[in-house]
Image (cartoon, rainbow, N blue to C red; front, side, top):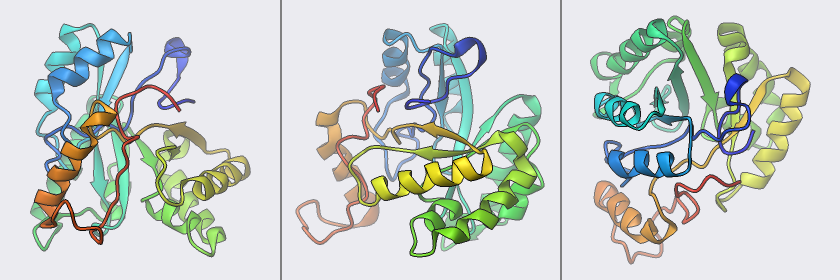
Length: 246
């Protein structure tokens, strides 16, 4: 599965599953119109939007996709437990959409931590029907796989599998960021061991690689750092554009 999800009638088509738009204010400069136009140009049959802990762009995204004959997939990358862990949830149907909206809302009503909406795993587990879950390098499973004791990831992944069954996937990226190659090796090992599906995507944060500097300026504004500070945190790479390659 390259840079997206290949399934059923869409078996030979590429679908982005990890896109943040400008509505993920702290880490993306992707505009909905530009995103959907690019997807139509590349003949993508479907497209997912997974803004960070919000669904603000859902209606605009849905209308833009349907106007171009693209199937919209509504989702969100959720902060789990604290701001250091993430899980991507995609709605499969009306039940999943209702559960997704409820989970996102809980982050703001019951999960605010220093002003940041966070979700407890049990809240997700209790509303898992109709949802697909994608766990990447920054999930609890991914963090365990990237640690000095990757074997600790197995019982954590099994908890997700118990709740989501075959609707939980591990995601991999090749964006020239630290630790990716070791993480991918561990993912393939645990996937063979457990039978969990693996999807690949690009964690898209801008449309073209030349937009990377503008994206970094956005990140610095939100984090309070200076763009020219060599010691500032650097969590992104120029490879996180909208290309459908892996």
